[in-house]
Image (cartoon, rainbow over all chains, first blue to last red; front, side, top):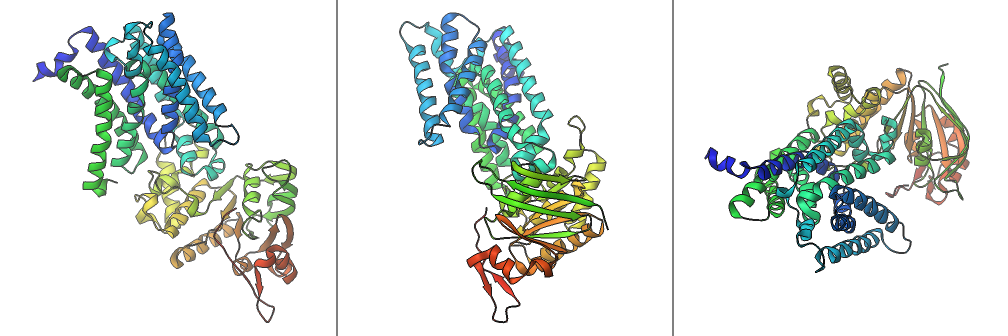
Length: 273
Length: 248
């Protein structure tokens, strides 16, 4: 039994993947709680998808992907912000068109016959392909995101619960949403490598959504979401190892399964809600 | 005479550069005084409160508030799906006095629990905010303002849609706050409620009247404040406002 549990992590690839999903799960879970509470799940998807062209260009140019992801997140946030202000078109429609256009451009580049063969991994991720340096960058940024969330916990709670009263409670509500989007952009840029452009949203949103199905208290939800994020990463790696599935897709599958499990728990034990 | 805690001079404020939502507002509130801010929906009561909170841009005039300000919004505007208990909400009132690096400690919890006790909700401290009744939620929001320990308290229609028990408890707490020397501004569109305040500010974009209820609640001032929404009873001594449910 112990051998079966240890086997997926018996070599360097598995060990680096394990550390990568642990740090990503620990950061994505709590961040996801706030994204759900601030109704920013669509922003998470928009930034991830909109970043694709720059990530692909970085891969084609041989530049570290994290730099491409950083530039991509900046382009996506800027494009989404500009699109949202176009007069005469609804914000959702303008953002959807912009993001789809950026994603389409990235997909064209990634899937073109002339592109390097492993470029499609940018769409679906490969936690088993991360280097030690990439794991270190992920750990540093995930730590920064967690510190950012902890440092601003009370501001985030006040502005989400009651923005009208926030100022009288010492919080400027206008500063809180940009802060959340900045933390989201940071997380997306490190999670893209492991989970891919299409699947990163699963680990960003599902653990938070699942935790909020199970508990009606904020602090327990944040802790539970971190635990679900980490468990989804580790569970996905086991699933990938033993069922020979793509690791990124397996992690996304387990994360989405947690939402279903959370809904079942809520339906069967309403007292937890 | 207590010190003046709120002083507003010739205030013009609003969200658009072209047109101010309120104009020519000037009044003072001393500690221990309650002022009913009376006006129709859309008349500028909420804009005035936001100007006092520093949220609505001032186009001209001056606002001065001493000793901190607490705001109690209408309970219908609070989020019912947010994962917080009554105690969590009351604790929010202590945040402004707590540096970010300091954890919430016993002193803050005691302050929040005492605030909940004052509004009669000690037994509900662990209950999720969204599962409380409308009146209980309003009392929790008042407890948050009590925990804030501000000298000036703004209440946005605190009795709107609350049950009789909650209304009685809210009234008691407001009396206690006045006795402690705090200044209260209570927005309402109920003339009868306004008569119970020390002073009344009638507002409909422009300031219509300010003074004691006898000075401010004249037939002429009410007619200007409410226009077609006002119904005068045959003896001319009472006024009933036709209420509706939209918000500013």
